[in-house]
Length: 96
Image (cartoon, rainbow, N blue to C red; front, side):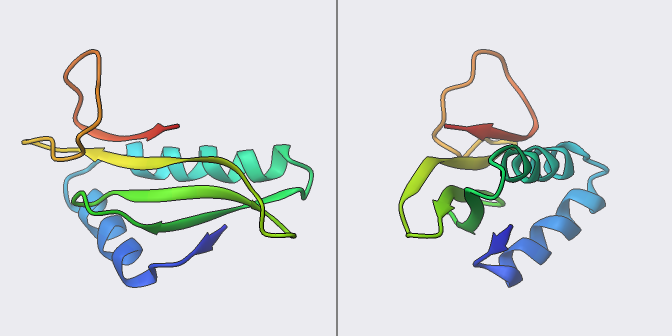
């Protein structure tokens, strides 16, 4: 996994710890599993998103082409992710 916004990532890790939330780490583990499942075809790139504590991500091949592109979004209180969720949720989730 390539983190293209290390300072933001570090702040989010600390914030998740401070609120006792494990959904962020579980989402990171899922994205790392996507890399593993691609058998080296893709690397996940994580980048800054405008929504607080959120990220965009993309599967990127060695030739620069993208696979799945989405967001690792924080649904806070209030939720500023602008994502549709079927039920109220507090924490991080992957959106594609």
